[in-house]
Image (cartoon, rainbow, N blue to C red; front, side, top):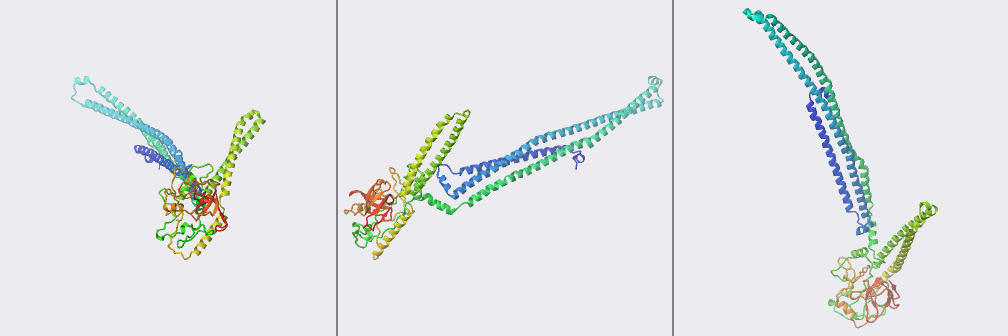
Length: 589
């Protein structure tokens, strides 16, 4: 249906309707703009969230990358960051494809509407002006007709009046009255002709106005409005397409998150825990059975079981356990926490503060890092050498001597890196040489089991209520090592337990014994031990000592330097050689 034929008399309503259409376009543009701002804000928040939980450099979170679930989380964060990028793409496309287009179209729409209604008002004013002119011709024709009628009536009255005096006849003859009446009739006839002519012209203009001019203008307005509606529909479709275009990439981001989640391997992570915290120390051996029910003397075959002083009878109810070098105190830290602090903390260049296994890994990692740096420097050297050759063959390209300072600097760097690499390789070889092998561990463990079985079988009549003279190490309720913190002492990374700083009657009694324990073998210190705590003895690396009491499964061996100096050292710090008559010929580390 055409607006021109159906709405020819609705000029004002069409003006209001088209103005409302423009306001709707402005409203929709504002809606899309706010949606774009929401997408931008959402993308920013997602990016900040992803950045917030990304692993920080030089922190504990770098070590977490060893675990599959941590790597999966990092991958998910990266995918989430890409996901945020797609929302930024949505915001950009909404701005460029809808907001900008509608803003430009609005200006065109307003200009076009203004032009059409200007033409409509001009045509309306013209027809109104013609109507007023027609009314003027009509009123003049009416006035002239009335004047002619009055003149005719006056003439007729004068001509028919018998009472007219001679003087009146002389003043105004009937001839003049007749001429006046005729003149008025002529004017009325002319007015009629003008009115008729202009009426015909007005009808033509009116017909042109309502059947041609106005329909054409309204048709343009109708086309403009339909174009506006079509543009709104296209923008709404684009609004949906903008989201649909990023769906494949968003799907890939979500697939990446799913794939990362599926890559998590619990078994691998469990194995990584072992690799991260394995110290390389051997677990303590079995605790030997010690008989308090009958007097026993140290002999050549059982020197490790008890001492002559221990053969003295003591009331079972009042006997106290022999103090082990593991005690509970307020400065207690767990093994895992301690190992991690040592590994992550600063220490000597050779990582001697770390347990053997962790030290080996650190040294190997340092060597790999140095080798990469060496290769990088060598690649730079090769590239500069080729450049120098080009300069030699083509002097116009550059001065060959300009490359020499850099080559000399690289050569010095390579030499230093190779020196450092050899140094770390030497330390690594030293660590691998000192680390116990699996065969040694199995042999030692089997020997402990044999000794324990022999002891129990020879003392089967002992009461089960007799007290043990030592507490088992690693027996803290929370399963943690305990150690006395000493600010002047550097904590060893092999987490050997520390003796109490305060004296106890049990430990003092053992060393105050008048009888001197016999020597059962010798040992060589593999590592330096400072022995700050009471009951321990300081040893230097490579020092030879006498063994007077072997390790009973607590991780400590009792040694003697001379008649006045004796104490405990960590068993993992020494290589023990027992005498042939002391539990057979046995050597262990």
